[in-house]
Length: 212
Image (cartoon, rainbow, N blue to C red; front, side, top):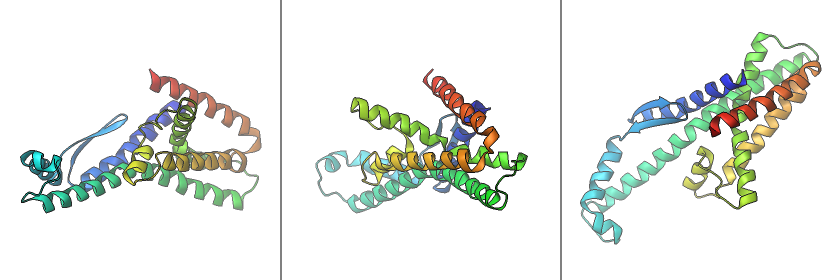
């Protein structure tokens, strides 16, 4: 079931990007692992000016549409930030809101079993497991002194002018906290080992599938 969960998380994440693309007037299409798009009016105009004044732009010279070109560039950068952030934000919003409901339930019923509606919330809270991918990438980067990957969090860190590890690290820490709360606060004790084992096996299976 965790394999299906990975598919749902991926598509839900891409839906966040799709909504942001559409909000800025892009023609967008969701596919597994990515969301494709066609240029909007801002991007098309920026590219046309860039094509007509490529020499002036490359040599930082003045040209008639320089101010407009720079303003369009700033707008595209803003759009890029929002679109890149939309996927992770929507995914984590689902995880945070579900976790809040689960913690509220547990505060009112400390030893009770989880019913179907609660397990559905656990399913949504596990949308945070995207952060586990960042953990794998970070460990690899530290060991091999390589890049921190091409995740949305890494891209967003660069777009904001931050260290490329900053947002992946926040994602990783958030994931660890949510998983800790799920395992030791939400899931009943008698089901804890089964839940943890399923998480580990499911994550390993997802890693192998994504690598193939």
